[in-house]
Image 1 (cartoon, rainbow, N blue to C red):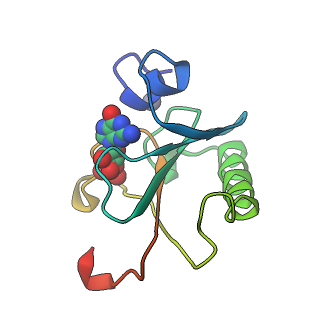
Image 2 (image 1 turned 30 degrees about the horizontal axis):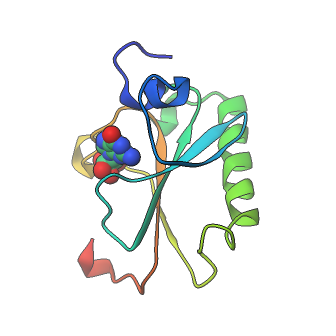
Length: 114
Ligand code: 5GP
Ligand code: ZN
């Protein structure tokens, strides 16, 4: 838990979010400013910003999160395909400094639209 982190506050429940799933490792919420018809954020519960700050345990947890996501893909409306994006730092335009995975779907996604 990081004092001034929006996603930590959502995980704690201090800030409301449109949560669609929660387990011990993650929450999945709807992005407030969707860039595709389906736009979720998979947010790991532990606060860290960068993949290169991960312990091996945190890396395993992220793997578990992605595995769980794959199991839930029908429920989330992702059966026709989806794209995962992890923005890392300034050049990627990362605006929330807490590791999260964008899940995009709901239409055919073109590279040039990103
Ligand atoms: P980043 O730019 O860090 O990769 O992604 C942060 C994402 O968080 C953005 O897509 C942005 O729309 C989303 N976001 C920012 N504030 C909120 C909020 O209060 N609620 C929700 N649901 N999403 C948010
Ligand atoms: Zn955080």
